Length: 245
Image 1: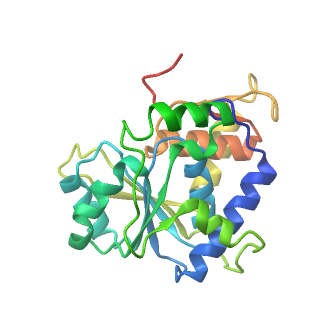
Image 2: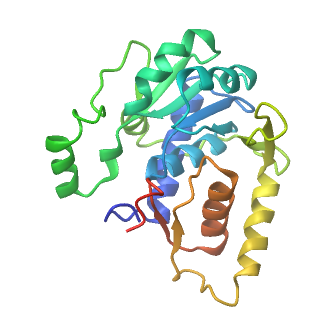
Image 3: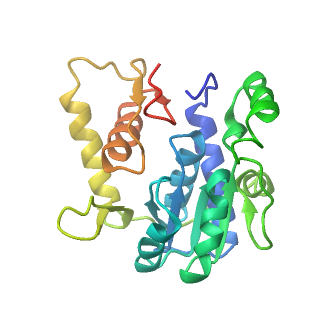
């Protein structure tokens, strides 16, 4: 659930299959690292599941990072591809040559808004708040990549339980931030544990999980995604955690 839009499990499965097929066709292979500069949004879920289906490892980064703060994690993780929300596109392009990033995939937050909100956003906020951009040569729109592979099936990539799913940077309390590895098995175990913990108060399929914690944090990612998928709970995504109402 996002700003009045509802995306079914079937739609999420289908869209992430298409994104995965697009990634593989464009050269992404098992073990490649893909960075995200995204708030909580349907695009985050589509891109994350699609990247996993392509065998890639994702590196979610805080959209609050400055350009200089992005350089070290992108370079150290050997990131080849980046998925970003449009307001952050220029920041990525400014430092791209200092990293291993080859291409950038951009997405506009309005793509999954309901029609009325999308129109109001386009008229009142899109240009004013920096969401309207022009892509540079070689980069892609997420929506176009998905559309171009609208009839594609999930790529036949063998993803194993001990493969890397996530690289999440620590808070840097013992020096500069370091990437902690999360495997697919670890995420599944986290989901099962948290679901068991809340079993006395949560009803599978019906009770809604509020995804107000940023999904570029381990709390938000493992808590919201793993629990929602493992427990089949609808997930209500909050892109701005300061905007709880």
